[in-house]
Image (cartoon, rainbow, N blue to C red; front, side, top):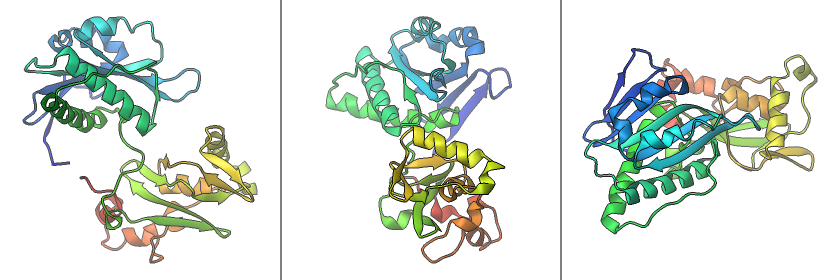
Length: 298
């Protein structure tokens, strides 16, 4: 993605309250706010326009992140009908400043956004089905550009439902894989802006260390991953059935080792250098020294 300038306006001076976001040289605009300021969100002039919206929160039945994605010719009127939904606590909606978003446009955007949110699999998508719409080729290209801008702004506003867990690299050289080995088992993964992704088919020990009873976080996390079908039993070890993102290299290593582990020494590159050694190469922090290990923007 090309570099962009983002302008964020904090209506109340608080980054968690009502805010607007715009990109340079783009006719779209985003409005975001917590459910506790619902009336303030609806009071915005932009809410009377057509657009697409995201309602995010925690699913009460599973305790997992959840999202509802919708479209409306009047965002304000449609959002009012969602007050009966109790899972969401934050709303973001996108409109166009030039008022060129038609019903077909927003239906197309809604369909694509629901599809992409399901593919990203970061949140439970609460929509029963997506509508979508067929568009002429030129309109479709315009909406794909609009869609790309939504992808750029959403994470800045604290919503990552569209962010793929594993970045796609154009070539093997763009993404250096790291490995974590224990007792003849091997896991592979790579760093991400959010932490670390362990790739599908990676292996983990079958049984937890006795010391994990004193510090049970890894045990609880491993059980949660088993319940979700992400970790499965295969012969004498556990197997990652799909890619999974952890908050840090140490969190990933702890699940693989079955107990507390230092991710800075547990993860190594193909030359056997640990993350700690890679960080010390230039004497800077992880963001500066490990830039080559992070997925590059397209």
